Image (cartoon, rainbow, N blue to C red):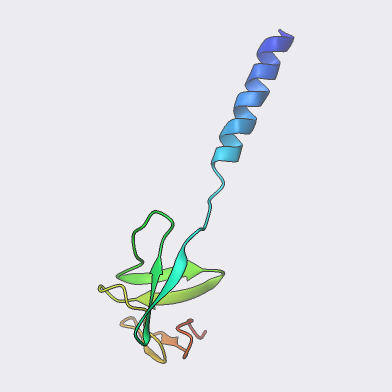
Length: 84
């Protein structure tokens, strides 16, 4: 019975540990524009993305909008972050 309980606890701990999200993406500069490459190699595109607790809007081409108004009417500052 103790072995079964220990195995159940170990399985639960391993499952909980594997559910932690890892954010390993990186910013890329293309000329005077910015893109964000996700840790899986894809690029943020076509909407809002939360990066380091800030929201950024990316066009369909993957370019981050900055110092403008996003298509949904929200404004982003010169760093590209949503200004609330």
